Length: 104
Image (cartoon, rainbow, N blue to C red; front, side, top):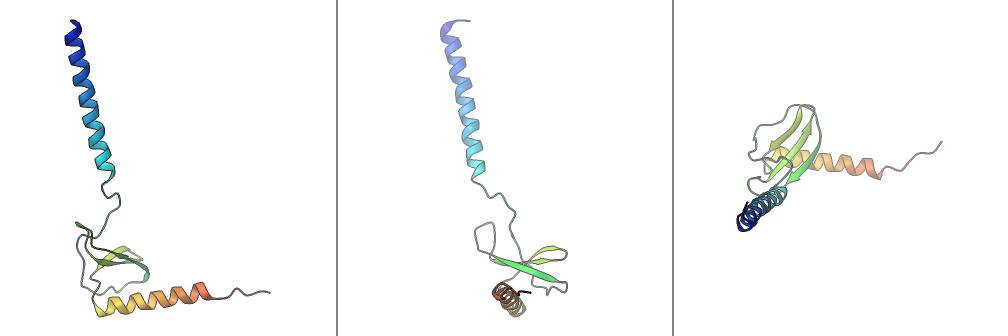
C-alpha cells in the first residue's frame, strides 16, 4: 500500500473512532434513571410506604412518586389528598427519627 494512502486510511479510522467516543460521552450525560413523564390523578387505595418529589426537567414532569406495595406510582402533586399524604408521611418519618432510643 502506498504510504500516503496508508496515512489517509489511518486518519479516516482515527476520525471514526473519535466520532464514536464523542457519541458515547454525550450518551453518558443523558438521564440514567427512569422518571415520570405523565402523572395520575386517581387516588391510591393501596399501602403507601414512602414518597419522593420529582422536579420538572423535560421530559420528566413535576410529580410526587409514592412508593407502594405494587411499586412506584406517579401522581399529580397539587391534589389535596397527595399533599395530605405527604404531610402524613413526613410527620411519621420525623417521629420515627426523633424517637429516643430506649435502654434496658
